[in-house]
Image 1 (spheres, rainbow, N blue to C red):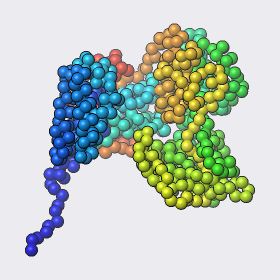
Image 2 (image 1 turned 60 degrees about the horizontal axis):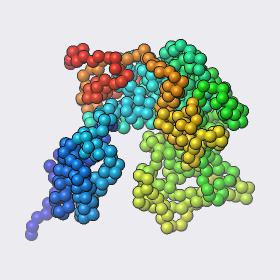
Image 3 (image 1 turned 180 degrees about the vertical axis):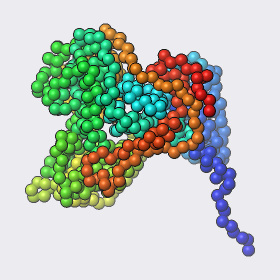
Image 4 (image 1 turned 120 degrees about the horizontal axis):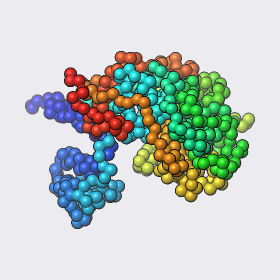
Length: 620
């Protein structure tokens, strides 16, 4: 009788696992600006190495595709070469036995459409497009293009006020972004090659925790130009535009519908995430520039006509945000207890805290606003459930927000599509009826849900919060002549309205609901283009500059995350949940920065006056 042995994991495959993990990190750290044709070649080579070699299309076809791609990249191809690439890829996609072959070929076909200009440039000019070139990942992926390596280095050297000043060169809301930014700057941090991306938001928070923004003097404004610009909306986009316009010497007049500035930063983000006293620090600093006037409680179309503003001002920037909640078309949505997420967060932002003690609250939606509503409802005493029609991994909310909600006792019911709200005899909400879903084919980059074919589910509840998106109150502006598509204003990349000279729009009203940092970027863009429209070309200076780079420390080191108060404690109040990063944590985290502004990518535009000398770097 032959013996049978338990087979341990193959030793070579075990070793390969670490190599694959390293490979994954390299892909995750792919810097912005690289040639997509070159990236496509790398993906193709990866697929070729994964091929088992059994079927001809994969075994022989993928190497041929690789040869053709290399020929194109070397500038040795022509239109016939491109046609051969497409034809061969189509054959492989149609005949390969498994996903390795047909997926690799399908990717080639997609890239030929998506990056047609890149392929054309390689064929016609023998080189990449002019804009191709490695860019500093964090700076490039920050919508406002803040000099991130510079302010991290300043924090490392204990120069927190200078760090705030350097941030303000591109973003006048450092405190807001330190607490609520979705930190796209971290997505392709080169430190990922070694261990994990830097906690950039955490380091920014450390800086503003050491010295509040309103204690750091803003730069002196340029000489007055005598120009007056109307800024409609005092949210992040409007505040940013007003700040830069003021520094340029223009008079900025903000028309704000509420009795306080901040927009959705004040009336859409709960205090436990962003305390309003911290928001006020940023606002006080912005107003300290001296050329900003605010007209509170002024609603356009009601208190003042937009045409009047356009006639009386030299230019106008519209940044009204998206502060109107969407509803769902279903029976019973008029029941007492059914509220929009935007409305309830606005009430809480005004200090009107509802009492949900003993009540069951259902929140419909899977974005950050839904998480804000659910976590706020817990703090109001409610038993909270989130209903979402897709899977948890399909939620658009930040993973950290979802995790925090679960830790605070919120139940997430996935693959449940809202169908009907049941009202009792008094017209109050009694239950939400949902139709169970199953996940299906991809649409728009995400797998779409479809009816699972089982009986509806009844969820007894007293309150239903609808967090499925936001609308823009665009009617008065459309009547004035500003073009819009389903309420979203149609502006150019320079924020201008081509048909109405001197009118600019930006932020959520021009993009649809997005993030604070994108609104800030729009405000900055609008300010500089308004300055240009008025016939100026102001160059704003910054008193702070980045310290010289030190040699990198490549020692693999864990990422320092911001700690939070225990869920059992924090869910009972609206006090800020995040704790302060310690000095030791901040120094270790800033020490992980690889200074891509000097090593690998060159000096940033904001440091173009700095001559970098290798001999000035102290050797270890």
